[in-house]
Amino acid sequence: MKESEMLQYVDHTLLKAVATWEDIRSLCEEALEYHTASVCIPPCYVKRIHDKYGEKLNICTVIGFPLGYGTTAAKAAECKQALEDGADEIDMVINITYVKNKDYKKAEEEIALLKKIAGEKILKVIIETCYLTREEKIAMCRAVTRAGADFIKTSTGFGTGGATLEDIKLFKEYIGPEVKIKAAGGLRSIEDMEAFIKEGCSRIGTNSAVGLIKERLAKRQI
Image (cartoon, rainbow, N blue to C red):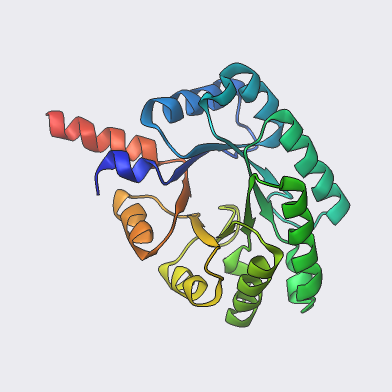
């Protein structure tokens, strides 16, 4: 796969708590230069990015991040604010306590509410696979599908583990045909990205893709 094709799958991401405006601005400039699918940034920067770049950038932000156990009302308010500020895509974290208590219906209802708020905007649902059993992952595949979300996403990148190919294979078996897959967390090489795209991921969440591809292109010129 050509580098330009690969970058079209990438949500160019910076979600560190210490991310400065200069860090975020640099991320956005790279996204514009390399034509990534989006920038994925903290909610507090959405309006500033939208004001500066307008429709030039596809802006993704996170809700209930990274632990997911805020109230549904708080997540709904976060989502509404992000959309008002100019977000095009929302990556929400499920309430993992619901899952651990086997209250899958509550998890599904929360996802459905945020999708209703998002409307035609894309909603990706982070289920944080590193904390879930196989049974719980399957339950979330079904909940994400029934709730009408656009994507199921493996990880926040802040948990104890990230995306695995085994989880992508499991997702493909249990999600509905309209649900796409995003892999995130622990993808640190071009080979990783290629493997996950080949396995069926429509998006890759990473902060290293542009740097890795810059490095590869530089080596070719030597």
